[in-house]
Image: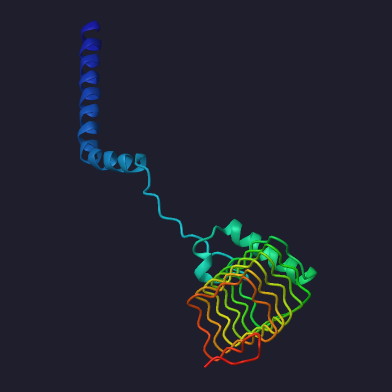
Length: 211
């Protein structure tokens, strides 16, 4: 009886070992695929470049916006809103703004930076642009009668056909500016510099017209 039990035990053990061997053999072809799968899961995904959100330009020209941060653009836009609501924005950053064909009455822009702005065909009644930066600003066709523009940087500004009748331009820098066809009748040009300025057809303070 003991001998029979021993034979049965040995036989069952062999069957168990054979079953394990068969399972391992059956699973072996799948191991490389499983390994690849797990390896792929473990690898980090390649980060995709994020598309920059387009800047909210508002009043700022695209050419100038390229050089500015969104925070600077937002500040300039807020300054424009302040100017339009109150007619005043002293020492404000207004670089590169586009305010074409607008009308402001007695605006105060003392010490403001309006460089590279487009203010063409706009009307500024009795404006205060003292100590303002208007370098490269487009003021063509604008009306600035009796405006206070002393000690102002107007280098390379476009003043083509601008009405500056009676304007105070004392000690302003008009070098390389375009004053062609501008009206400077009765303007105060004391101490102003206009080297290399274009003055073809310009009406001078004394009323004579340049040829």
